[in-house]
Amino acid sequence: MKKRVVVFSGAGLSAESGIPTFRGSDGLWENHRIEDVASPDGWARNPKLVLEFYAMRFEKIHRVQPNAGHIALAQLQEKFDVINITQNIDNLLERAGNKTVWHLHGRADWQKCERHYDIFGFRDSYFNCDFKSEISKPIQWGDTCPKCGAQLRPDVVWFGESVDMRRNYLEELIDTASIFIGVGTSAQVYPAAGLLMLFADTEQKFFIDPNPAYEALRGFEVIKSTATSALVKLVQDLMQSV
Figure 1: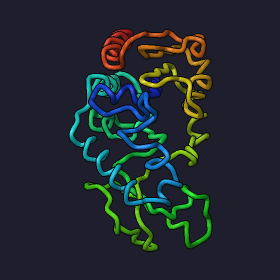
Figure 2: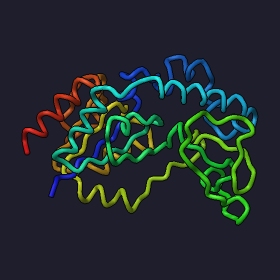
Figure 3: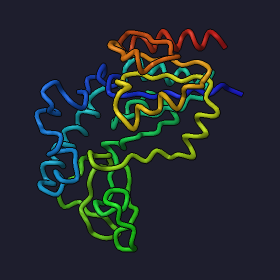
């Protein structure tokens, strides 16, 4: 039986493919206030702006290619059972060949009904239409849910919305992982950063970041490097160890 590797990745992994990180030093996301394009309030104020913003993200994601880090993780599957948990809303891990990817914050090329209960907490029969699907082109204003006729929106988690942590599945991963790799994430933003502590008892733990917060990484082998170069080397070493 293959050993299980759990990989927790953030924006730093996809940045090397040319996808901008979520928040710049000026507090903006691609020249937009986060509150205007990534919150329920922003959607309520100006849904057309939000759709235009995510249409640009959609097009950007489909123009770039998986980098050596994404590809290395896919190669790791040859000898390990690899589970990817990512904060990224792109599909680069999948396009590189990774089979199991859990998107904590959804994906920009998924859509769902704006009235779906996972967004605003509604659970009655009208709002609980439970519609979501993958899309081949950006969502437009006027694209509606086939079940209830409400506007469709990107299936991504915005500020003010809860992350589905799938606790039963997460507990299984904690119990069965032999190796944990954190890469491209600050290890300081919750709830996702709490994953590092949850995997504290995992036999082998690695954390890759050019500016790691060492105080949060007790027990980890810290690799001070960018995601791509460090992942390629780490994957090679792990595969040679089997």
